[in-house]
Image 1 (cartoon, one colour):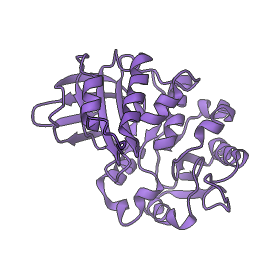
Image 2 (cartoon, one colour):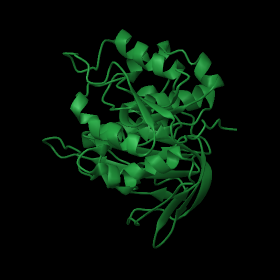
Image 3 (cartoon, helix red, strand yellow):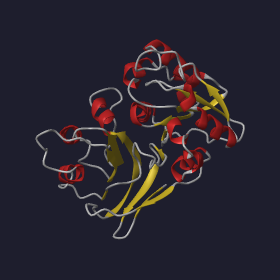
Length: 302
């Protein structure tokens, strides 16, 4: 059975770190303020607003040490990754999870943090939260339903989401543990110690800024490695800011995704609100969900 970290209570401490890309300190302030208003204390890692002059929020060693310190800190009950970008894959094999696996805490984030989610699920069977990060709190975002879904998840409230139907949806019902995240990162993890297990699971996927041919290639990588043949169900989120080559690929992103999974008979939902936009519901990795893809609506609930 999946290990569920302890849900948070008022007064608990959330650690804030940047284990991958750089983020300016002022871009994190709205998140800190909202977390405090929710009743939590916030401990800020050294990588947040660091003096790094590179793409990363610090050297591999600095990012590793900062994350490890939050992971091992008894006072910290959850670790919120302020942003993704790229960098977890450079340090994931050096993180020591010995203490963490005995006393799991919520690891929160998406995009590059998919590496952590998959690693924790595959190796330790521990749930984590694929959810909005610090940037989502800016410009009044802390009051929208997607950021608030993180608060609800941390408090242990049962999740039930609904979205509109799409013409490419394949109707049906599925029950299974929910796994997934960013397509590029899941394709990157194939064959590694963090490779995701998908058989009998509800898989969700999203991505941003990719060439259409690259989405096609990464989906075929998942297909050829056996990741999408025996799913219970498939939830396709936002594939935003896609790009095309000078000579057109010849299909939309929805058509690419539809055709790659057309031979399977499990339910498929398109355009579910999990994405690199503000439409990004918090999802508990490894927890059992029921997916209903109907004629008039789609629901995903614990």
